Length: 277
Image (cartoon, rainbow, N blue to C red; front, side, top):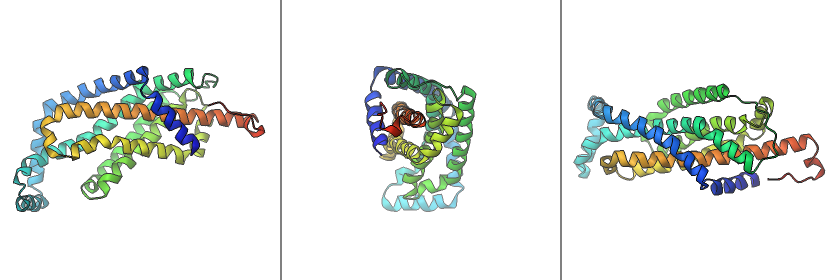
């Protein structure tokens, strides 16, 4: 637990370093341009299709009657756009995570390697192709789980529990590989993940909970839909910042664990020798 909290503190301090802040803008620019163009051209089609689907669903009529009874008849017009946004946000999060893993994570680990872990030997047990395979496979599984659990997102308390768990698991899978790819051998990486699976998963879930904060911005009011382009850009940058912070947290924790494991393997820690942090 001490290592977990110590890594958290160091990651938080490093997240505001100018180099780390710059790393948030690369995925932000790419994701904003990509999703901005897509939603700009397909917004009417997506909302129209969703509205047609809702009108064909018997439950929608009951929901609309409830809105009328409560005096919120104007909500009829925003349900379809809100659902489109609710589906788009998880896909945007996955996009930003993939961009962080490919564009920012290597720079984060090099930053830590030169500043905090300069004496840690680089054994390069991970590869770019291995990272890509890990990202694609984990993302595919996460999207399948997302689709399967999507109906539960409308039911309390699942809408508050499922997203952080999904993003936490995905973040843990992707970032634990990338955090150790440069410094650990393949065997060391597998052993470290086996030993520290629970703390790494906790870091992932904590990152997932932080990642749910921008979603609360949307959930706070359906009327924010009229500010969709601006709010989307803001939330994408917040996601990017949170994921760079998560990358630093995973990096500090994993490299520290690797440092300690190697010291113990050579008898350093077992004889009371301090392991520098």
